Length: 201
Ligand SMILES: Cc1cc2nc3c(=O)[nH]c(=O)nc-3n(C[C@H](O)[C@H](O)[C@H](O)COP(=O)(O)O)c2cc1C
Image 1: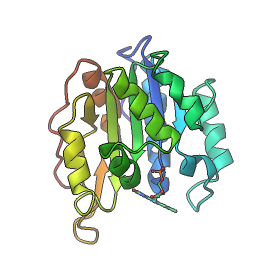
Image 2: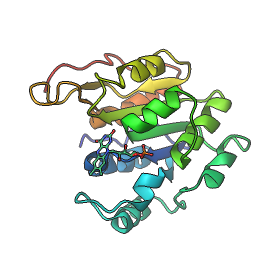
Image 3: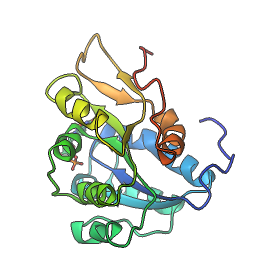
Image 4: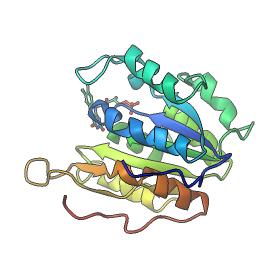
């Protein structure tokens, strides 16, 4: 991980939404710490899937413990819990990392049936930024149109992404999680960090 600590996010309230790209969650955790190290205040939000799923990548309870090491804020894991983000204007920016194809598809089509999506809807209600770090095997397949819609949507920004394994998973897209903090800093200024499309590793 790069050295952060230039205090670019002092006082910024950041909703960090985890969705069920379970293999990528571990990769995102150091960058949640990085957001905090830059001065951000972290408000964790879990999709139902992340809240409940034990997989070969992690146990849900262990993940909650790890998040507890980064922030003392309680994990928002219900739609009722996420709803006040709208009327109370709780968050300056909402980061969805990793963002599943499922959550991206629903967000692009106005479906709100998880705490993750409720947080996103509440944020858009306030005209405030959302940052998406995609991680899905169907990014250039059935979800290409949804990513395209979100790329063209006001107040939505993307962590730059690439095809992670074009030879074996031609439709798979994954964000470069190392660029999460920079993308958040740009999004808070109303700008999409560029280039949004990265070349192969
Ligand atoms: C072990 C495991 C790994 C998964 N990895 C991904 C992934 O990388 N990307 C993705 O879009 N979906 C992935 N899924 C599927 C999602 O978890 C599933 O679509 C779920 O409904 C997502 O819900 P959410 O978007 O509300 O978190 C995975 C599922 C499992 C069980």
